[in-house]
Image (cartoon, rainbow, N blue to C red; front, top):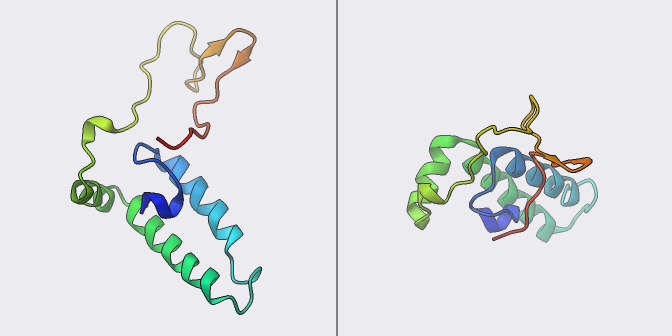
Length: 104
């Protein structure tokens, strides 16, 4: 499921949703009329998002493939230098808390 959406097993729900939306736009039937391969890919994308967007189903799926809960992405505990939205000050720039991360 994670490889269908092209995300890591540690991806947050926001990253999974963003990846889903990008892939649906890319493989939408209106862009590829009559392409059976694109339709099959869209069905797989929808199924993967259906499983990974529900916390209970994602937990069962993770257990079935052997992903440990300890490997989940965790938010940092607010420390000095954070704002109300969790952005950490990095010099003059702000680190975005929901930025995409490379696949692990």
